Length: 231
Image (cartoon, rainbow, N blue to C red):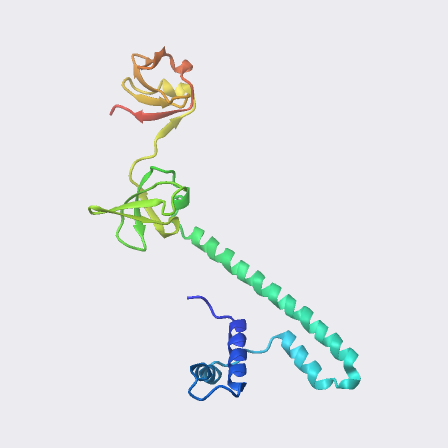
């Protein structure tokens, strides 16, 4: 529900006062009835500093003090603008504080759901419900997250997702050629060169169906380890 501001209350009471003051409204007129209800149940908010200045000027300055009165009214206008600016600044601070609190409430060590790479499979919770498998389709979708509920699929926003844990381990990346030589025979890697070529290690060299065999020093890094034989 949207918060009702003091300005909303003032506007509602001004409308109600104007409606009740119109002689052409009959007692049975629904608009007049609504206006009477507003005036009877909605208390006027405390006056602002600008309103206090205007009221004081109207009360204490008569025709003989028009210059001072107009100066005070002009000051009231400036104060009113300052009050508006402060209200907007306060609203922005509240928004940023809420956003920061939301970020800080994320589980430790887990990324923001919006930062999850497309295709990564996670155990997720939506709206505090039971965890279920889900993956992120990407930023191009209005509802980027897809969850599996029994035999059905559901879709939702990043802000509705709470990550529980990753279901598929993050692939291991290698950027040092010396690490390639530590992999056991049978290991499979994916090179990031052009068409992303898979390689398998056999007897100390790397073999692929798409290129001649290579030594570890000849493999273009980085590479992703797709599979390693159990030790």
